[in-house]
Length: 182
Image: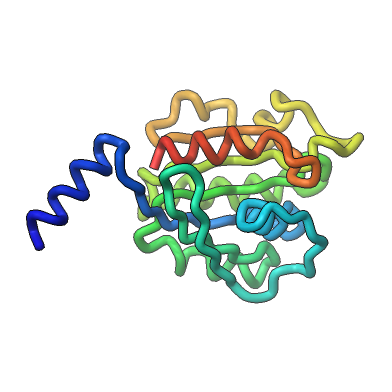
């Protein structure tokens, strides 16, 4: 058994074998977490009810098999996020880039994630969603409002991508970045 595990580890390290990763989809309610998860799962764009209970999906993206958890974004749901940090390999944090009124709240939650020592080495993919809407902010303003100007200097990998899940653009590059940093 040891020899088989050793062989699979060698293949994985060479990029010749599939990796497995546990990722969390986090962000405030109405940011697009469930919609993105469904698009990644079966390429269908469907209107969803707000997530009331944590759900999980298995995704195969490139050579990475993800166990993805959508934990919801309502205030009550956010209290559960920490319970899922155990052995997490990556975090996808979505923000509605067209809802500036909620930036301070989103920044507070994101800061708590970034500062949590139990996941200090976990890569975080931050997606500024809904760039197709007229009120969406620029990437520079997005980074400033969420306190992400430091992101390039962080020890932990932090990727920031602007996207529109509805228009199916921008998030692919982000997911690829996350796959490479896990």
